[in-house]
Amino acid sequence: MRIFKNGGHRLFENDSETSKVVSEMLIELEKKGMDAVRKYSSQFDDWNPESFELGEEQVRRAINELDPQIIKDTDFCQENVRSFARAQLNTLLPLEIETRKGVILGHRHIPVKSVGSYIPGGRYPMFGSAQMSIIPAKVAGVKTVLAFTPPVKGRGYYPATINAMKKAGADRIFVLGGVPAFAMMAFGMGVVEPVDILCGAGNKYVAEAKRQLFGRCGIDILAGPTEIFIIADDSADPSLVACDLLGQAEHDPNSGVALVCFSEHFAVECRKELEEQLKVLPTRSVAEISWTNNGRIYIAEDKDEAIALSDDYAPEHLELHVKDKDYYFERLTNYGSLFIGEETTVAYGDKSIGTNHILPTSRAARYTGGVWVGKFIKTVTYQKMTPEASRLIGEVTERQCNVERMLAHGITAKARIEKYGNK
Image 1 (cartoon, rainbow, N blue to C red):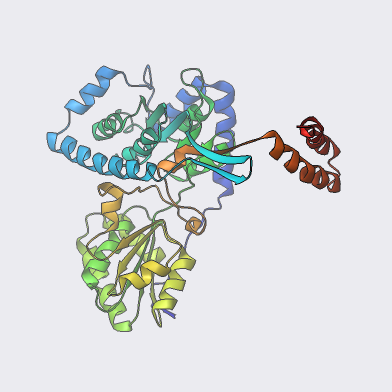
Image 2 (spheres, helix red, strand yellow; image 1 turned 120 degrees about the vertical axis):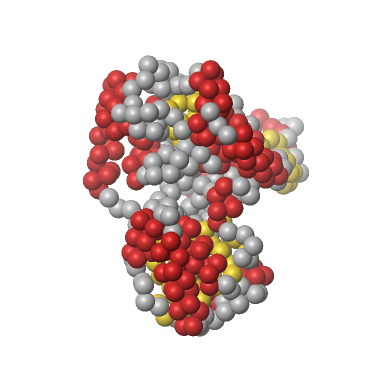
């Protein structure tokens, strides 16, 4: 394996200053409640309305501002997400089995009661994130979804985001951003009850707030800067590969951008395409920094080395521009979402096709997938048994407890042996 020029270092968040800032903010927000919320919202977003929550009339006005085509396209995207989430839910079946005579074990799937959904703003108002967290939660059976989005600084909300939140099924909509939004969802602060799970992406302060709040409530995943990894053989179209790499590079100057190919010729052609396309890219100011600082091109000896490189990188998004798609599909294991063939692309997954775009980054794909309907469901077990089975299990349990010196445990088993022994 060789790294062809343009090798950068993959970024991992380990920012003690960010951690300190967020910790201090959360302490003040929990202590002072809405007063602190208003302080920070004014400070960071020049936003201090009478109420951060939008009423029904405000939501209607926001939707009425939109071009009908935006509404129609959002409905199309959301129905795709909803259909896939419903299909996923159908795979989550209850279980009940008799493991020994008279011993019944089982599990149930129970949705959490409430979810806090955060739809990011900032450089890009990513209103498509609304369906990615709200729809799977509602399909799972979550009763209450609180949806938060940051304001357009000093001006209020982004209408397309409000429409997407409402259509996705949000029960309450708030215009509030960053750490205060997550504190409000996690702590409750009087105007809302604390949620069970926090969901959604954002900047480094948002990610750190979720990390520090985990345990008080659940979180979906810790998502850092976006990533794309492409495996392309010599049959691939260099211009299309370059286009897809830059498509993710525009997200953030810290975006991870990597290509694995099999010849220096293809690497050279792809790099030329990248440079040419960057000259006319509307978001060049961001994408060029990302590609220059973080871009990598690997030249692998064979398919297996390409797979090993990809699995070690464990990318958020993985595209296959190859002839032998099945070979890779059957062997690749570490990725957030896989895009098979040049006909699909990360933008489809991000916006419209129906799979979720809240995905693991920074090698977290080694141990978790992204957001799906199951993220909002607890799988809980239960057990029941006949008196005869209880006596049999009790005899083994008492002996095990005594070996571990957990004598009170053993007594609970012995009590049942004695109670059911005569039956």
